[in-house]
Image 1: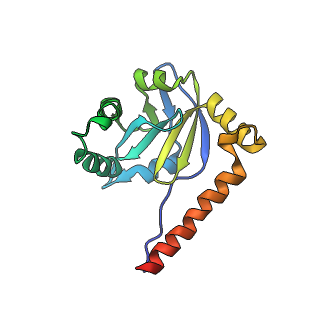
Image 2 (image 1 turned 30 degrees about the horizontal axis):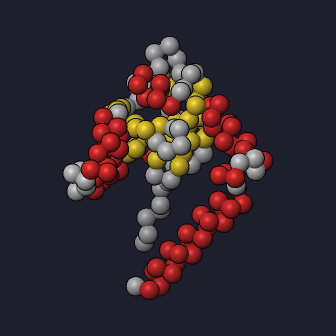
Length: 167
């Protein structure tokens, strides 16, 4: 019998307190638990956000990147990505401490949006998240054309079906 596929989804708003902590939603915390431990890694993400990775996922990423670590064109990326990773957990009420360098890297002031995105969780400055969402919904930005993005994303599903039928 197939095991049900877990993925992160949904979003919620949170505020940083004076100690740069935010509350990670409970349903997302549950998805980060592995081997009975709630430990994860926060790093720089795409498009102006931070990303929370499960420990097992960051280990897979690191293992694959190790094979490429001596290729010159990847050096700056590897240095920036791995030197800014922050190993973290939550306190008893679900607060996560956000290091100052990560907060500053993406311009978080106080309000953040916590977004579940498949196998990771993204942390966005609320202003940027809201701006991206509005532009997407109103079609104000050719990069963020909802109809085109939806069509292309769902086309990936067809590609996967074709790949499996060729095996």
